Length: 56
View (tube, rainbow, N blue to C red):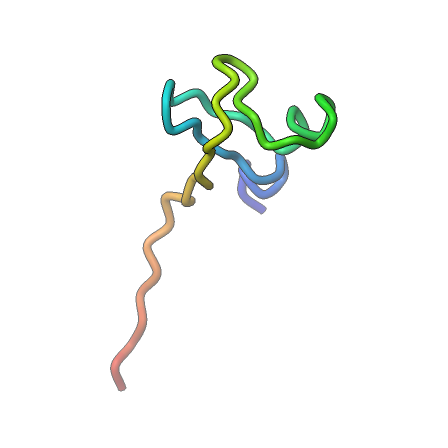
């Protein structure tokens, strides 16, 4: 199990680049809002795993 899946989903603020965990959002009332700058646009951080698909 990876570190990110154990900690939950991590989002990144588009304005300031801060990383915000799902648990932090739920503790603050469940609203989608950066905990540092208050900006309301967050994007989900993709895990650093490269998927390989065989063509056979």
